[in-house]
Length: 351
Image (cartoon, rainbow, N blue to C red; front, side, top):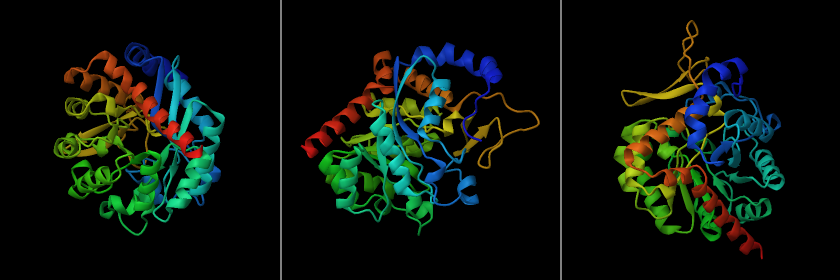
């Protein structure tokens, strides 16, 4: 299906929300620290039924090349200058080399884009270092799906993010985008121990805990954040979290300079909202998806999930007493400074 563009629905539902709530909140320049891009030709084989129906992967379209990302953000954020940290789509059916090449082309051709390189457990340090420097990638993106011999809830962070990867990340001061595996998410003891160890052993690596450690519901951040909040090289992105209580707790315990805004496009260009029922996160959408709940007989008049995320950030920040200036930095400056510091490291390494 892909991003949902409908002029009449935009005029009636989305546009009033954007102009009243979203546009005034965002700075003139927005940096999206978490977006996926891939071409149909980057797939080694068609996505399986397991991939299409997985609530972890939230599959919405068979391709989302960079040109489509640009079109989507022009629709979602009119009047804003958009910059992005993008990377491939880490599904089992992806040809990682081809997908990384697409991101490499994006980085080369658009000064407003930076990119991460998809990595697999088999990738060795010399290979990773060479590819990073040649492609000007500012970091690495491991993922549990590349640990194909284990179920998601059995994957350890060390399985998907190896010593070879971390050696290069530490040497070059790279960003490492971490989507925590396991049922316990940020609160899982194995994840906590791994983050603590990696932070200490690889202090120059910039460890981004994506989705606030998959804290779509409060319990994960309530139980887990205290164990990692003081780690100096650990950061958090807001991606796809639509729970203001999570953001309130995050801003109350972590300096806002360590928080970056992300969209998770194309997924957040769906009309819907992530809700929590008895500690379980569910996806409610206007249109029907294999991984969501919907009411086709009487469709719910949802707005974009991207807007629901921004609403939640706003409300959580307000209750936490975050200043307007600090909040603005979440949407641009925090991520920009991190990316620029890595680009400087890469220039030195190539000198």
